[in-house]
Amino acid sequence: MKFFLDTAKIDEIKEAHDTGLLDGVTTNPSLVKKAGGDFFETLSEIASVVDGPVSAETVATDHETMLQEGLKCAKIADNIAVKVPLTVDGLKTCKALRAEGIMVNVTLCFSANQALLAAKAGATFISPFVGRHDDVGFNGMELIEDIRTIYDNYGFDTEILVASIRHPVHVLEAARIGGDVATMPWDVMKKLFNHPLTDKGLDAFLKDWAATGFSIL
Image 1 (tube, helix red, strand yellow):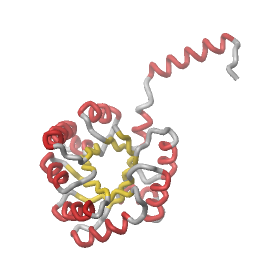
Image 2 (cartoon, helix red, strand yellow; image 1 turned 180 degrees about the vertical axis):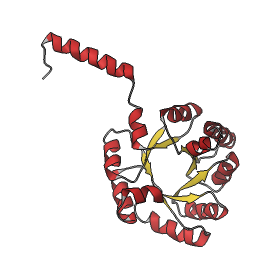
Image 3 (cartoon, rainbow, N blue to C red; image 1 turned 90 degrees about the horizontal axis):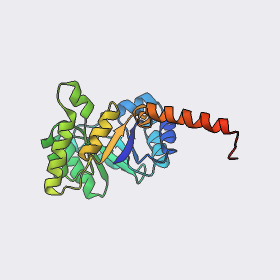
Image 4 (cartoon, rainbow, N blue to C red; image 1 turned 90 degrees about the vertical axis):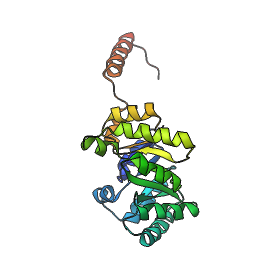
C-alpha cells in the first residue's frame, strides 16, 4: 500500500518524507487555504519535495474551464495529478486530461457506481471518502470492498486512493481489503508507529543496557 499525506503544509510533508515512507501528497482548496501562501508556489514546492504524485484540485464546475485549469496545474511539475470532482463534467475532463498523458485523481466518490464510471473514464486514482461516508451512517469500508471487487472483475488500472481517513483502523481495514493508496493527515500517519508494548519494551531494553555500563560509540 502507498502512503500519501493529505496536507498542504510543507513542514509536515518534509517531516513525513524524511521517514522514507511517503509516496505522494493530496491537497484540496481547504488544505491550501489552511497552509497559506500562493496556490501555485505551494504546489510547486510540494512537488519538488515529493517524488510521487501530488494532487492539485480544480475549482471550476464546467468541463471547458475545468480542463483549462487542469492543463495549467499540470504544468506546475511532471508529478502533478489533476484532481477533478466525480461529476459528468469532471469525468469528461478526466478523459481529456488522460488523453494528454496527465495523471487524474477523481475525487468525492461515494458509491461503487461512481467509481466504475471513473475507471471507465481512465482515472489514475479514484478517491472514495470513507470518513465522510461513516459520518452519515454508511460503512465506508464496504464501499472500498465493492470498488475493489469491481475493479478486479474487469482489470481496471485505476488505483483506489482511500481518502477521508480519520484514524489508524481505517488504514488497517483499507490495507486488508486491498486499497492501493491511503491518504491521511500527518497526525494519523504518526499514530501508525505507536504501540504501548513497543514503548514498554524499548524502555526495558534501555534500562538493561544502561545497567551494563557499555557504550556502542
